[in-house]
Length: 132
Image (cartoon, rainbow, N blue to C red; front, top):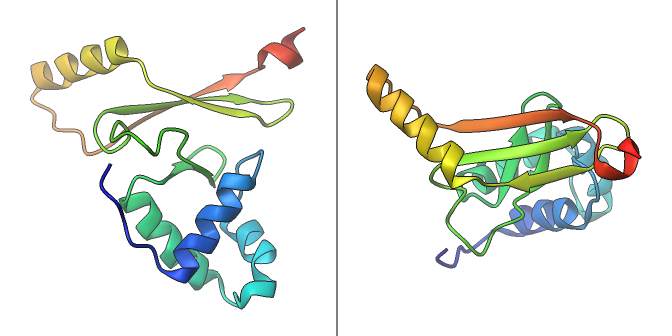
C-alpha cells in the first residue's frame, strides 16, 4: 500500500482504533478523543470517511462500529472481499481473507452481470475461547 498522508484528526482516530481491543462506535471514538480537541461527531465521521476510503479501517455494518484494518500493509482490503468473525460473547473481531470465497463470489457476480462495489462478510457466533 502506498504511503498516505493523514491529517491530525485522521491519525488520532486511527490510533484509537488500532489500540482498541474491540470495535468502536463513532461516539465512543469521540469520547476517547475529547481531550485532543474533538467536540463534535462530525469531526470523527469526516476522519472515518477518509480512513475507510484509504482502506485503513472497516465499518462493521451489523454493529454500527469501526475497526482498524488488520492488514494495512497490503492492498487486499481495497480490492476483494473483507470478512469478519464477530464473537457475540466477548466482542472479539477477527478479520480474514479467503481467496477461494473471493473467487467464487466474483464468478457468481460476473455470471449474473452484477458489478459489486463492496463485499463484506460478517460471521457472528462464538470465538474459540468463549466456545470452550
